[in-house]
Image (tube, rainbow, N blue to C red; front, side):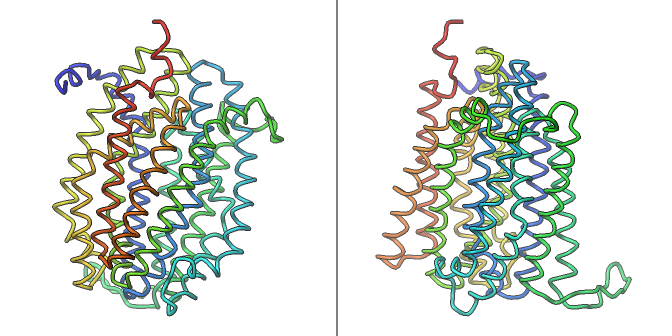
Length: 463
């Protein structure tokens, strides 16, 4: 079967896939690099600082993923419209995406800022770091409107096949974040680079400086991507109706709502998961935070390919080209699995060295290395799930992924972690074991989905 897959590899189609995937991979790599730098910089202030920043990160996923879910509705609609050659309908959808940015951005600004004082309490953060964790959370969520623009408008551009523009803007955001981190986190100090000494100005704000740097970068990114979209030759929302358009919003919401419930449910699960880990103590919280940051770099190939899979499968569906959809599946699956095998092997080999970058604590490094090597083994299986889910998102089939992810998160990861860590007083290793069981459950469910053809709405139609 593997040989049959590789016989069907088409160089021209691989070139198209790669042209869409590599900008997204580079964008995610830059974002991960900044996470690495942020974590290393904050980590140099001590384990407590790392825990203060990491303790509310899962709430960030909860909010960001809810907005991302809405953008999936626009991705499926615009990719299908573009595949069918209906640019007018695609532009109408872009106009509605502006409405989504205004609604979601405003709602989550009010929600996040009003709850900033309570989030560290709900997350069972150590009382000694709750104040700084709350301040960090508040500052990062002040620019929620431009953050929503970055997420939704970025997806709109990718749905049309433009993955380079979001990448370029992401690079600019990351540069801003890194420069401001150097200036805001540390005190003014003398640096020596290649034998040249110079004074580096610094505000000495610590964790708060990292929050301000992120907020400024988010704001700049949101403004830039809005300007680009407004000037786009065929996607500009200028002249389009911003008021609710039922003909556009209804199919978008039909796709987005299950995905939103999925992301909200799984992100809420991440909050519950992190809360239980936080209760294990500062070392476990720091090891978990750093390991999550390290692990995220090794999912870049998978999620980069997922964006390409969603866009191209949506285009093929819009064109009613069943053969191209089959060809795309035969392209994506072996490429994705091969990439994730390489990624997982690299993570397994490099885990201790990567943990050592972010922490001076031998206990944190050892614990983080152990859980990273555990999860590395499951990466190829998770990569398969990622690609099938992306293909289903591109054609608007989001109900099955919603069911699979909710069952996996709450029925396996959360229940298992509660039993092992809260009832039997087991460690972070047991919690990550439950996470791996969740990933394997998704693999088997998406494999079943693929075999039954649920990824392709045209499969039951006559050729």
